[in-house]
Image 1 (cartoon, rainbow, N blue to C red):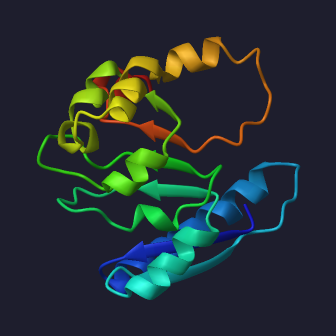
Image 2: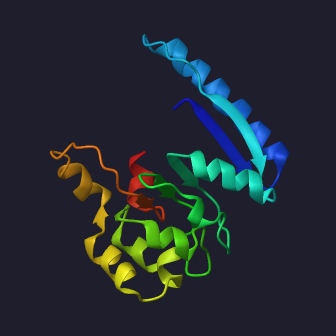
Length: 171
């Protein structure tokens, strides 16, 4: 990862996160024999829709970690082959992704099958595409077990997590 952009409603929170990430990378560098270049960090305020749009457009990995009740960005800005980690919305009233984003998704991986009933999945229309996503969705465990097929995919993918307690206990 060469560049990390933090989008946040509160610029001060974004800057604090960047400081924390840099500190953690330095600690990791001390404890590992591999030396890697640190990514470039920057931040963008969530209300600057043009800046957010540009960030989404160039991103290969997008991570959403909020309890938002409306979409965080316009899914039309996502490029084919992008991967989205949507780990914030965990109940029917929350969503981080819009319908345009969901229509671009070609493969869904979830932490637990319940993730297919909350957040974005509870709000998207019952279209042929959404039904297909739910039918072909795999859990993270299933995906790891099937990792024998290690070809790089050009698919737009989504990892949806609602926070399984058993995973929290394990970590």
